Structure formats: structure tokens, C-alpha cells
Length: 354
Ligand code: MRU
Image (cartoon, rainbow, N blue to C red; front, side, top):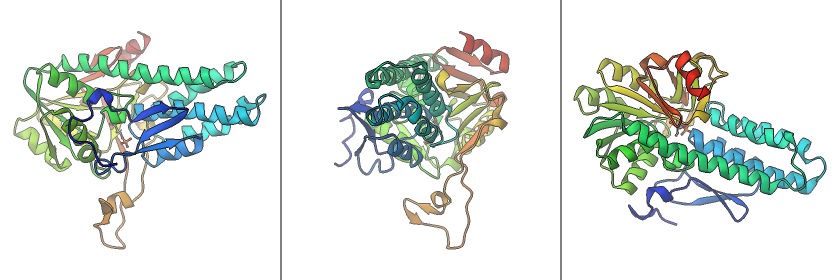
């Protein structure tokens, strides 16, 4: 199937993850925007591999996928052994939790589903676990809409904004985190123009964010990541708006590589910096950013561009997928429970107690 024309898919209809006729259905984000295709999965191990291989990516979307993958595993193990399936499923849960290390939503979803399983589900567990996965999915969309309103309210009328990576419907249960604020802010005429970093090396900005914004008809300009500082110098953006893969207890934020340098540049140019993430991304068990595991991905992602090798044979590459932005470079963390300005440990604790 070819890519749909702009506006053929309204934003609230884009679903990176769906449960359809007893199967897990994922948009294959590796081939967008060239091709719009779905993968259908029936078992947990292939779902874990889809997460590792970035068929589906973005912290909240990975969490929702994991919840549905647990349903697939429960179906398989209950069929295999209706009396001992709760024990037999455990290695699968571990495999899933390790599919990617940085986004805490993945482990959060697995532990949530494991809690239900370990508490005991009488008889066939599929319907009970499926309704929980669907609840997690629906709550993520509702949280994104709330964050969209809260984040947009912080932005002055007719502002330019810069975003990094893809944090939209493709990265979440639907609507998006930082891109949800962009959607709400554009609708409320607070955002006039969006700049999107292309986000080397995987090009989430060029391939996915630009695709979502074109679908929306939101005026957007793609820039090379290295143009962001110069863009700020021109006074073109009032806010940088990004998502998060994990927020530590002190407000330090792990997000897509390049977020940190953008935050440093923003502070220098007096551009405000906003992080938008549901509380399922907040990890109060991780004291600060130095304790967050950072995924290192294949060198090939840096040595190649669009599948074509651009570096000479023999060249080496370093490919950290995420970096840590310290809390003191962040002006606002927007969650569905409220906004934390100038985050500190005490403020994060108060938020999580709400
Ligand atoms: O490697 P990815 O594409 O999974 O990284 C995604 C990001 O860094 C996003 O900014 C983050 O997950 C928030 S998505 C709402």
C-alpha cells in the first residue's frame, strides 16, 4: 500500500498500535513515509523484537504495545498449560521488559500486567488482560489530550516552536505528547509555526514528525539538527517542546539524542524549554539522570544514511540513542496531573502524590 495523501488520515485516527481481531497490529515505522504498512503479530517474542527493531517506537507507544503483547503471551501459555500458565509466562515478561532499556514506560507496562497476573486471574485470563491493556491505551490518549491543553496554555499567542524526534500519534497511544501540545497550540492559535529537527541518525523528525504535520496541515519547517542553535539566534522560536523516555525523581530527563544540546542552546538564547510526558514516564525509583540506562544502537545507523553507506569502510561510529537533560535546563514538565515549573525532587514528589 502506498502512503496516504495529506489529510487522508485525520490525526486522531492515526494509531501506531491497535488490537484487531485478536491480533496486535502495528504501523511499520521503519518504512514511513515511503510506505504505509501494518505488521500483524500473534506472539510475545515477535512483539518484543518489533520493539527492539523500532517497528514501533516512542516511550508511550512501546508501553501500550507491551501491554497487548502480554495478552498474546497469556493466550499462548494458557493454551499450553491452563494450570501453570502464570509461572510459564514469566521468562516472556522478562524478554519483553528488556526489548529496549531507556523508556521506562515499557517496564512500567510489563510490571503492571505482571502484577495482575501474579494476583491471580481465575480461568482463561485473556479477556481480563485485554481489557487492562485497552484501559492503559485509552488512558494514554486521554493523558495526551490533557497535556495538550496544559502545555498550549503556557505558550504566548502566535509563537514559533521547535520540536525534536517524533512525539506524536506514532510515538504514543494516539495524539502525542510534545506533538499533542503542538496540535492543541496550533488549534488555539498560540503556535503559528513549527520547526522540526530531522533527528539524526534514525530521522524520526524528518520521516515521522514531518509526516504527521503534513497530514495535519500545520505549517512546519524541517531543519538539520545542527541548524537549531542558529534558528534560536534568529529569534524564530519561543519554546522548544520535547517528549521524554524517562524522567528521574529530581526532574532530569532522558530523551532522544540531541535533546540535551538543544536545551543548552535554548538556555543561552533565552528560549523556554518544555518537556511533555505522562506520569507513566516518571520513574521515582531512579534518583537522577546519571542512573538512567542509555541505549547504544548499531553503528550502522550512523555510518549509513537512508540505507546507503556514507562513511568509508573502516570508519567507526558511536550511536547513543538518548541523552540526559539536567532538570535545571528545563522550564516546565507537563504531565496529565499538572505542570511542574523549574523541576526539583520535592516538586516531582508532590506531583506524583496527586
Ligand atoms: O528511539 P525512539 O524513537 O523510541 O525515541 C523516542 C523519543 O525519544 C521520544 O521523544 C520519547 O519517547 C517521547 S515520545 C512521546
